[in-house]
Image (cartoon, rainbow, N blue to C red; front, side):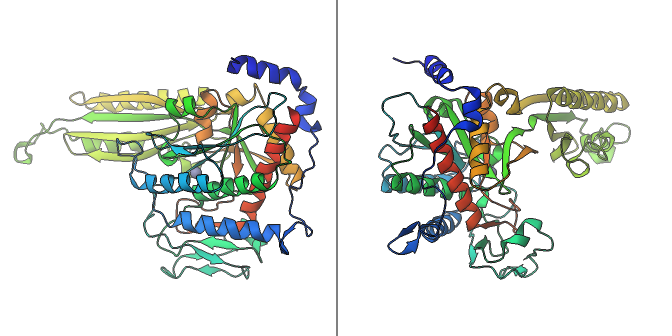
Length: 458
Ligand SMILES: [Zn+2]
């Protein structure tokens, strides 16, 4: 039996760094070109039609996750799409497709290399949509060969997607743009990723000459609430490297995310009827607002920072005069910065507690996810393979330090290096969300190249 360690050691010996980084040559029929046809129709048109059909259908299924739920997955509606995906995977020949009892869909595209070891690569996308905006009754609209003018969404004409305010939309004239109808999000985050992966399977089925090891397919629930990747998933995925398809701009490649902690501050005041509250009531809500007031929101909040700057985000407040709870997200690219934020929070709580000794204030900080760079920089092969695929597909890779986390942040920390490839979604988590089907096709072709390059390198 080959253990994962010896398997990888063997593989590492076979690849020299230079070869892995850029010297791998595999020239399969991967790119759209005018002679690439099926029954007279260009393959690119066929791919786009299929992407549209699948994507629009997936978007109409409500899969919103819920951070307050203790169930796994957090909402039962996600399972509707997950069950659908098992059937669709089986329909395209993935015989081993199944849904786990923790809500993850797995399947395998069988490899075609039998005479040597090839790493198993996984492609990952999440079925859930964000809890932050309406996600029920999504009505996707396909603006075929978009005319370049502002798109007024019919169910709320106040929602206008204007190229003047969306720089990435400006060069999309003539492409097929999908939007929601004005009152809901679209769900391109991350149903575009799922449709792309399904298109990748079609592509691999049609191109047996692309050399490859086993390709694992993985559709997760609850990514939006940070619960997509469990130890059970890590045990069942059986992959050496993975890629999430969960990024925005074509050309963006993510090998670095925030490191994240979550803080909860509990304030216990003194509760008493207001009739006799004079000098006795200690209102927990006042103390909670004092803590928020003291935080340096002009230099350490999401709305005052950008690029590589970290922040503290007051995510929620709940409670009453007797007891209040504050929930905060701590974010920084470096662990030192994250630690400094936790210290600042503790000091702020201590300061406010001093102003009211009768109150009890506690602050607990727990880790959420870590910057994937800490592990990827030890083994950049998955990033280099993706970079080469971007370049060969006509993109200059833009290494984006992503101001958030992905399923890949946790997967990388837990042992499977998982950078993030774009799926083309724009303005996620709101009514202005849109995606270009042509961008999705480019992501599909990049994934096909990634598969071929790993196979050729083995
Ligand atoms: Zn996402």
